[in-house]
Amino acid sequence: MNDALARPAAQQPPWRDREAVRRVRAVLADEEPVVHVEEVEHLRTRLAAVATGAAFLLQGGDCAETFTGSTERNVAGTVGLLSRMAAVLAADGRPPVVTVGRLAGQYAKPRSEPVDALGLPTYRGDIVNALEATAEARAPDPGRMYRAYVSSRAAMAVVRTLVTSGSVGSDGPAVADDGFFVSHEALLLDYESALLRTDGRDPDEAALYDLSSHFLWIGERTRQPEGAHVAFAGLLANPIGVKLGPTTTPERALEYVERLDPDQEAGRLTLISRMGSERVRDVLPPIVEKVTACGHTVVWQCDPMHGNTVRSGDFKTRRFDDIVDEVHGFFEVHRALGTHPGGLHLELTHGDVTECLGGAQRISGTDLHHRYETACDPRLNQAQSLELAHLVARLLPARPLAQPGPGAGA
Ligand code: PEP
Ligand code: MN
Image (cartoon, rainbow, N blue to C red; front, side, top):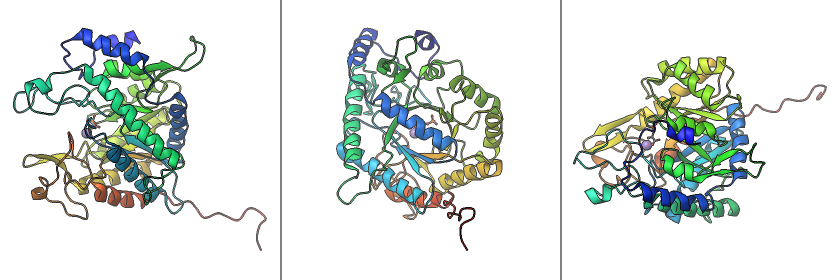
């Protein structure tokens, strides 16, 4: 573990008080974890089904959760929206959907610039500093790692209650029978490594889990093959994702699968392409061909959000049509190669926000200021999310009608 963490780690906060970091980590190391080993193992088996084409993965939630926004209402709202979308996707005999929230821990954000337009240190997510634009609020505060843990536990408690009751509110959708899993970007290594736990086995054979979440992914800005994030993920028994932006070469993709899926285990690794609608049809095919030819059965997942971010006035936004186009491109690529378009990775919220342009509500540039509430990237609102689910459902195969068995019939 220490070897992994000794490697260069991108995007870590410039903590001033290392002793405070050490103290918080020591406290976290003694706490109950956020998720359980059995749940992580259950997700592993479900992702193996996704990788082999027997199921579809729906993952989504806020770009950045916030402490004040991690309310029971919001957590239930995200679980409810994803459950509704899953029901749309799986209707009419289409493949079952594995549902994973970007929640109960999505508090760390990678940033392109270390300072913002005002010259202040950038907001790195509530786990590090505060969004408020003052020097004091933006100073990294190690105590926030503990708050992130408490908020994650609270959010997970809400998820567990919903899963146990089987539905999201009295008139809300059913939570999928398969349960509901959680995920976040494994960005802040001081936090993630403090939540490492082993299973109950003999110490020599024990598997190592990051029990901050069921599923963890490595972002576009921290996927250096020799860096700490890839090495850290390589130690884990959790299923792992890697974001692949448009500069990814097939050789680079192969390096990730060799490091992170050395045993060629179906569904161990999820490759999350986020190429942009204009690039996906060119950049993705040779990557899929190379990884597949080398014997790895990964989950291919499409993030149609992060390659399609544009500016409209003062706002960062995304066009619904670009998002749909990237999803179509992703399905076209997999159809042409005979591989499984395994899932979607979305930024969305149950609220009626105005953060992405278009959709049936025809949100325009002049509407964005009405309810632009995100702490980081623009999210699909409830209507846009459901519209997307209906469009994607049409791309998924309906279960073939049962054939009469041999010898049966007239
Ligand atoms: C994200 O998922 O919020 C994110 C920052 O994505 P990426 O690493 O793909 O840019
Ligand atoms: Mn984002």
